[in-house]
Image 1: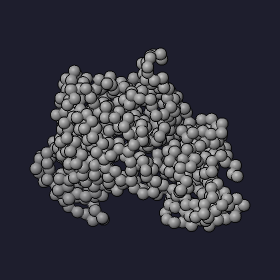
Image 2: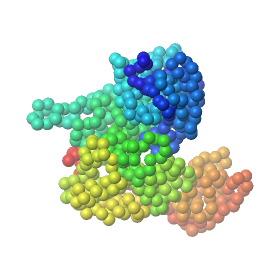
Image 3: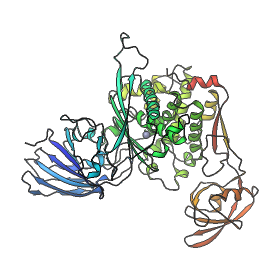
Image 4: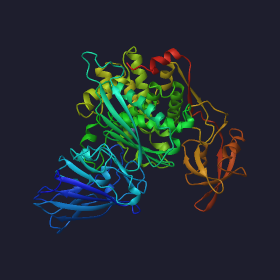
Length: 619
Ligand code: ZN
């Protein structure tokens, strides 16, 4: 008999902080006449790229109960074959954990963060068996105040935040609760649903309390009460959106704070976040909403919405994948696009920000799509399908050749929301589509077919949006955003970009007469070209990514003066540029075009019409 309650049990230890090593002992107490096969996933749900996590297993060996070494044969990059066995087996392995991201594992002297997909070898054939886990407290002196932040279910009297025993119902559950070991602050808050209900209202389901904890690791100086208040309003918005008993009663925002990193990944009842500590609000900023904090709230809003939308409501192919190879689906625009629409919009609807702040962010989203020339070459469903090799493996040509299913998906969601409101005489909205998806798919664990949105809108809701849906999903035509926004009292305005940092959303502070068409960064002399947009003056002149551009008509360029010098010349004039390319000096001729109006901002021209879309009340 094994001393563990589950026949598959992992004991995990932080073996070395300086060496960034996690040590795992996997006990298997199941006989196998063929020999067990062990494997590690190639990718992590929510991040659609082959990452080959098994490459970080740096040592592995197996032994039987008596300590006799067993032959462990490697079948391929991520699977191992054990010999036939009748008794318990121990597999010892060490993982190099030094990827500072939400997708993998990272060990250093402040904390150790890891996903199950990087850490726990699956015992094939027994993926449905319960998995026990023992988390060992690191012995190093600097870890004396470390605790455990995870939503893995506790076992054997272990308390939340303690080292000790945890138990997952099966392998899929085991890998969907990331774990953070370290010193951290806990910012707790509760959300009771349904909201505004007196406890004794007859015939209604009992009130449900969800306990949230914002975990802040890495050190910070932020106004935690303000963050808790804002997050509470956002979480309450999402509960009200789905209008049902929530699928969770405990949820963690596991946040790693560093100098300047960014990331978020959704899980069953938690999210892992990576963020810049300086972008959290300080007490001194009480009445101000800094852009970086607004983006943090939007990120939290996004990941929490995924608790329903992609973690539970999801395409069948994502539900059934063993993560050994790609799981192709044309539906990511539904799951990332709708979520990207609601993440920002819910900030306004929950009154965490005001409507003008939301319209600024929406203007930035529309600007990103407008500048994304690839929207005329790839459809949003193609972009979803090819996420593995295109969206997740972008090079400098991406802006010209692919479209983001996040950005275009969000703009389709916006158009759909407005179209549904208009064609249903304001009886329905995209909220109803979200509820339908939850009730008919997520809640009962039925995968969504590829045409699910058409089925809901055209068949279930009987709305005449066939040609809109067709054009939005299967063609490269531009979306009717401008006319739809106009119907809801919002004017879409276009202007030239002011400088390299101009991301739109606001009126211009100055005007620029000329269009250049390339992005660049500072160099010791001149600038380095980082991106060239198709059919622009820079493109026609033959500028290419990597060129060191040093002069325009004899004027030496810098990162800060390039556009000022450029705008000094009249439209249609020819300029001589010198570039250094592969250690040779080249002369190029550039013909100036007038500025492109590719920067968007929104203004309100009818408050009453706007309220039909962005009122704080959800129907
Ligand atoms: Zn997402």
